[in-house]
Image 1 (cartoon, rainbow, N blue to C red):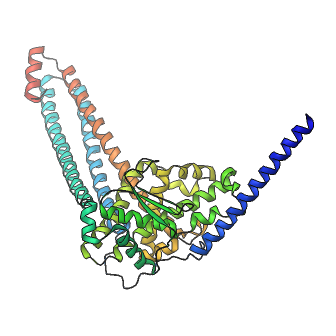
Image 2 (image 1 turned 120 degrees about the vertical axis):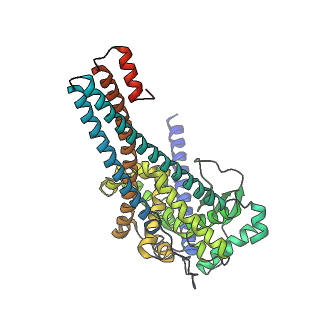
Image 3 (image 1 turned 90 degrees about the vertical axis):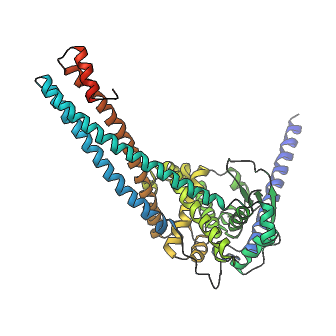
Length: 431
């Protein structure tokens, strides 16, 4: 029995060793093949070498949307001061009502309350009207944004040709090289996994899967996933060392941090790569639409995700565990990567340099100026979010104060109930 157990143990050990050896060997040769076909992070085979760039306006968050938000923030600060002034007037009136000596004095105060209430309601009405106009402008912008997606796949193919050929031709113009023959592109009706995922790339399978949608949407997504394929940030980290088991079982802070940093740069590279599309499309209308698409996706991401970055100002002070937890959330990783790509375009003022830089730089060597641009972009949006919330809180507080003011006025009137009611109807017709 003992000998049998030893034999079984030996067999298990040998089979485990064999599996470990074969998997490590495969891991080594896969890594070697990856480097031969795609290069390394420091020296990738595919980089952007666009020549004769059409003179499209460079659109980035810092030059396009940030100035508008900064102006909006100043307007919000002015509105908050006005609300604060109304708040002070209400408190003063309340104090006067409580110290009034007779109904005549109260009636005079009532007229003052009515006037203040009228001015306040007029201010709120204008505020809400402005909000409606902004919503209408946003809706119009969204409609223009969606206009990019209006063309069906069949119409797109008639105008631009087969999706694959059109997309790969644009990518060839970006890199100056034939598209890798080992990468296969598949279309599907629905991609599983995280909600909102519209395309994926697997460097192990060499597959790009794109969810069917409007023609130019899919062109943009193919370019994005190709950016993943050409940047070797994640691959470099995955094939580091000889042992594939490191990627399966090693969850030490250092290793997980390195993976997330590589993943973030890989994602930022992909977003930067798709930003190059408008600069290689000959059709001016399509080029401008693609430029708007790439710019607006960044704008909507930043404005829509600002709640996730509520404490982003301290991102550079987080410890390893906190950063790991932050970037383990896919939404944070994608949004932050998009902001990083945009900030890198701002820094270089050149989308070609931005992509080539992000696809080759080490995380710890990322230029501090790029972090500063990201921080500034997030800061102005965070301020906008905070000011809007403060404005709504002030409106609610003032409304409560006005209600209490009218109740105090009623309580301090010395007339009989019928006289009180008549007086109240005079002063507050809607009471």
